[in-house]
Image 1: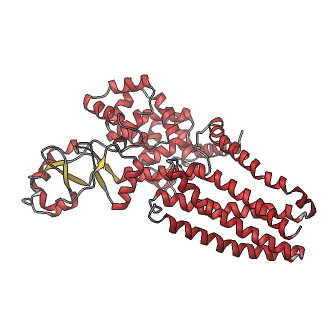
Image 2: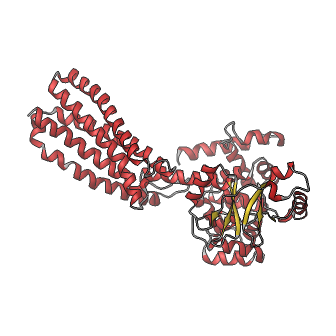
Image 3: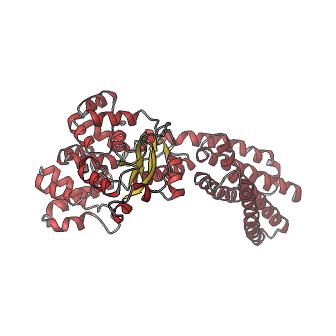
Length: 479
């Protein structure tokens, strides 16, 4: 039994021996000051499930928001998750499903009855519901959709018809629209009459023409401050339309650039079909950032329930590619065997020079990938950015080379060897800066993801030229 399992068992035993916490204290007990789920709370829930204590379980769950329940699911066993599901009402279940990690959600969806899942989907926004349905197996998807009302089913099917990671998948079809000849009073009265049909969250009333194309947006805050007889056309603001087929990363860039809270999504003809709100964009930004960080290291997301085989499959190919490139790099060492045999100090210094270049290359690479993703690095300023990174590489190379050269002289008392090491570091850090900035730019121009392959290229370049610089300069000066 693992140490983690022992700890969980001990916590569960402790929880069973404790008197139930008063209901008013459960919320404080559930979350820490950082809003993370307290470790003691998980065995308390597991204990209530083991004992079949429905009342205690209801009290424990009522102290959590749906997002916290989703976090709790990640710490429970598969059996406990299955037993917990019937205790969630359809609205809470829908909110929890939209917040779960993909792997955990797929496992839960397998055990949810189709009718229960259909009711939960009815309580969700169309974009979140479509995201959940997309994770279902073909047969179960058909059963769930068949159990839903026609309107909700049609909305989900339409959303799923759009390409993955597009605005059409990201948008919610529920919008608030009003004709441009309406007044503020007519609009407010309409909102009150149709309150049951309104989106759960909206910030703007989109003003549309007779063809249902958005011509402006009236922020809710403006509606509440304006007189009832004020025409919408007087208070509406310009809108930034999002094409339904636009990539979600592009959508996130537009939201960030124009500081948008919401934006209308339009079909090719300009007709309003949905809206995207800032809460959806926050998720996209986090998702894209995680993808870039993982891609830089050549790995995929290893969630809490990820299997060993899946993780190995995602990481092993890049290690094998790196093995091949390193094999090519060490051919330089083989070409200078005689020189190394004459001066053993070179064998000691080679990994230092190579490692310094690798770190410098990673610094330049990270900055370049981030700049490309945020549109700060464009063809208009590419030459300036490249020149800046090369200058930084030379400056850092000079500073680090001087320090390593002094250390070499202190250890071996050989001025010529110190000069060799210093020059090799300067050369390798310059090459590292060049590779770190050029590799992602070139890959981006070729239509490839610069975060995926750049690290292998940079590692190869810094190792190859690090060995070449040190051994080549040593051959010229020392031997």
